[in-house]
Each structure stands twice: as structure tokens, then as C-alpha cells.
Length: 170
Image 1 (tube, rainbow, N blue to C red):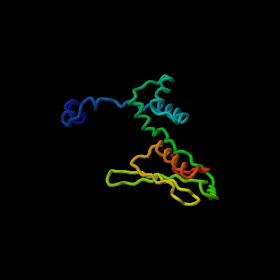
Image 2: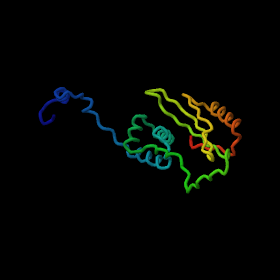
Image 3: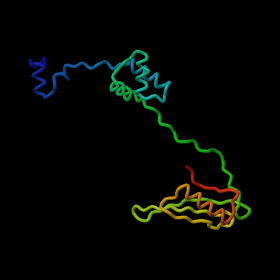
Image 4: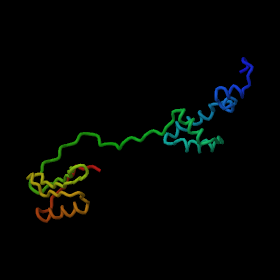
């Protein structure tokens, strides 16, 4: 602008820019706040930007939450994602084979679909020694009360087993 003898206002109008954006000085980058944020995030890994903001306020550093979030993101700070649940380690021994009928029953839940939207489920109760299917219950919904009722019916017919196993893990 000084090279062409034109006012700042007229130059901004020619290039369709708001004069306030040209006149505004960029604020300093706040290296001391960034340093404090990194120190807090290093000791408190589960703290997000809001809790780090509270910690900064306790130290006397108060700022807008939007600016705090921007600095937090620019620093690459983020709450680390929690890992899944730990699985059992070690070798598993095979389950011993039962030595007689009604020693061990296996429960299994199977599901399928009748078409685009009609899902049905089946409960299978199998004697592991004889490989006999003691119960096969099919329904659109199998509640816990219904499963207990069917097991009681099987116990009345075949006697109580020593153990009941199921491979369904919640």
C-alpha cells in the first residue's frame, strides 16, 4: 500500500477484505501455556482439555475454552483410548469327557433370520456323553425365565446333571 500511494481502507475495498483483519495483530502463541499444558497432560494422562483448563486456572492462567481447546489440539494432546478387557493367558486344558449320561449338559444358543427382518433364536440342550439333544426350543425371543423353565423341564425328564456348560461369554 505504501508503494502505490493508496489508503489501507481503499486497498481492502478493492480486494474485498475486511480492514479489521488486516489491522489485527496476531496474538502471541502462548508458549508458556503450552508448556504448562504438556506438563499437566504428561502427569495426568486421563485429563482432557477441560480438566487441564481447571488445573491451569488453579495456577492462575485463565483463558477462553475455545482457545484452550485449540491449543490442546495443536499440541497433539488427547486422552489415550482405553484398551479392551484383558483375556486369560496361558494354555487351556481340554474339558474332560464325561463318564456317563447326565453328567454334563451343554447349552447353546443359535440364531437365524426368516427373511429380511424376522430373527428367531433356538436353545439347544445336549447331553455330552450320549450326544442326545434333550431340548430344542425355538422362539423369536428367549428370556432368562424361559431358559430356566426349559431347564427345569429337562431336569424333571432326565434327572439333574452334575454340571451345565455354555460357551456364550457375555
